Length: 547
Image 1 (spheres, rainbow, N blue to C red):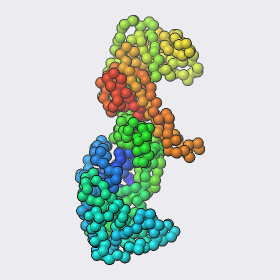
Image 2 (image 1 turned 180 degrees about the vertical axis):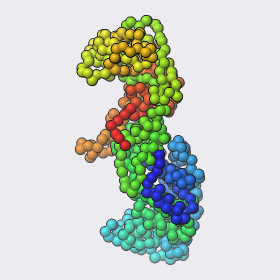
Image 3 (image 1 turned 135 degrees about the vertical axis):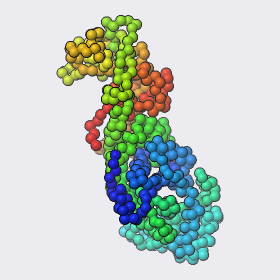
Image 4 (image 1 turned 90 degrees about the vertical axis):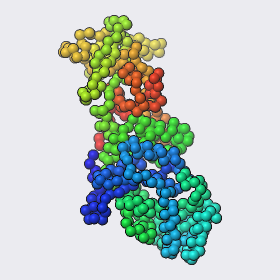
């Protein structure tokens, strides 16, 4: 899909004017969580835009806040990026630059542009002012350069406990942009860092470290979400006052929100911790791992993100847009076997007992290159419960009913003749007859059936569990809009059904994807076994959504 957006135009102009020689972007996830569909937008944007100009993208782990970071997330993020089909030119860690960050902090102190503050976090917030009122200077703001250098070194050497002192930029406490009111550059945290161990007990703030890291790597276009728009002036201040010669520039784009979808790391963590889901790869989760397990393809996710465009405003889109991309991607790729999700037994009374024949069935009716496979047919079959009613209600009914004839796809015409019921009056079995002259492919041009339905032969059928995946959250309505997050969880986000698939699927593997005839797109789950296959519903065959 061709990319056209305002950032691409900026890049084109920068290359034409000679402002930059090549396009270099970076994807900077913090390794404190698993990536979700929101992160994917940033990733796809970074990689695809750089690639459009034969540039490149670095992966940089923003591990400057060690309280929740872990190597588990580092490896998971690498795997997710690889799965989406991207290959960063370099892999860096923000912590790799700690010595450089410290050196730049010393430079700012020596220039009189940074000072060590003894105010607590709460006191600092009080001194900061409001959107309508200026802040006031810290009583420690006018310390001498020598004193600040000494105190900052003592901070580094572990003399002070957490939160006792902070290194702040000396800018303007009356600035209309609150981010410029002497922002914190370093804080004290005595903790074991996942890469640096206990070497450091002071850690740079994101707004200080990020522009320095971009500059160190030669990043030309530092892309981020819109909430960093009013941080850009601080980004530029750091770059300018640290005497960076080759200056990177920050550009912001709007976030992509998805209806009834949780994208907050905190909320996703609470779902896992409270065991409302089985883990971060639960197929109901919007994490890339969850989406992958559910059956969404990397190409579908990338196509979905690119199709939403890129602008300077936040936007919200329905989940159906991702389903559209998935159907487009798998339409000609996925095999299309039969699966009966809610089975009803059918007995063909005039078919020979004990005989099984095998009929040709195309693997994908729209792509002959995928070939054919054999499907079993016998006296005993399963069809969907929803494909039968006792009495045909009207002309719109195009499935099986008593005294109504339908074609079993790739097999024969059958006509229902009677039913068996349990003590509660529920139909448990349908009896029918078949016409051997109507075999599929025989050239029969006689009667017109009342529809075409699929089936699975009973004696060769493989038991299967079908996990019907729905939204984790109930739709926002007048009744739900004021509910707590946990109260708004959809009790039917996961519905289990037990049915059968044809024996063609006996060797299916996790992440194999299928379009089950007339049922939708499904993916083999990692819980699947030889004795009981497990499939996740990715999406239905169609929706009312139009992109």
